[in-house]
Image 1 (tube, rainbow, N blue to C red):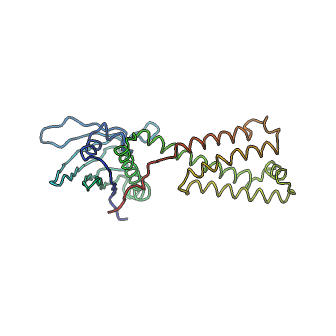
Image 2: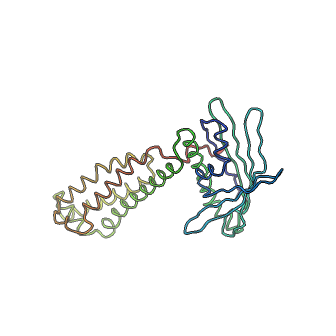
Image 3: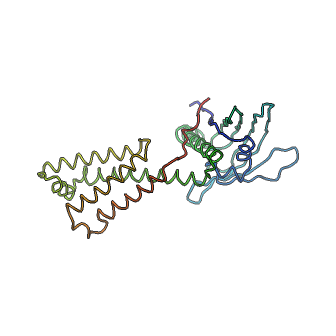
Length: 300
């Protein structure tokens, strides 16, 4: 397995000093970079590199703590700048053991090309290399690219990183929620168990025979599973949310029409569909202008 360095590049419409501060000052850097939960500069000794410590929270009360140092910066006559880093960690649970990389700032006519390239050695021998190649390296590359887009939006629009990440993670939690709901509703009560209540409601609503209603339930179940999968792969989530804002009221009215007594049941179609309707509205308004790793160039 040949190891490829991680490369991310983005164009930012900003003053170079503003971009430099946002990437070199720890209190600003840790706000937008998803890879780090905290960055702390250590006291600098004269004629020595700037050393720092970082932490990355990985959940369940665990974190990866590491060290780093700025091994050099270079300011060219054309005002382009380069900052080189050496980083690593002594924690045994970290997939990264030690690495090196750089950030480059290249002024263009009306913007700055900001890019990074870095690579690292892994722990855990051949297993660590395999896991890094298959899972971790694509994930850390994606996190770097997403962070760069958050930085771009912060400097260009003043949209704070915390606000952007709030929208981003809310958007994807809602996406996975609706994917799960539609796939489960189509797969379990319709395709796997063929629940009698599903057949009865379909039979009453569409005036079908029992055998016809059974076939209709299978068709509806397949459509719901397909719609759940579309939630994962279709890019325009706002369109899906808008569709659901029309669909859930119709489903609620249909359920009431077929079986009014269901209104007295616990967790009935009204409370279920109204909840999903409200979540669709929230998702619709929060899914605008979501940061994306796809905004970045990932290869030279």
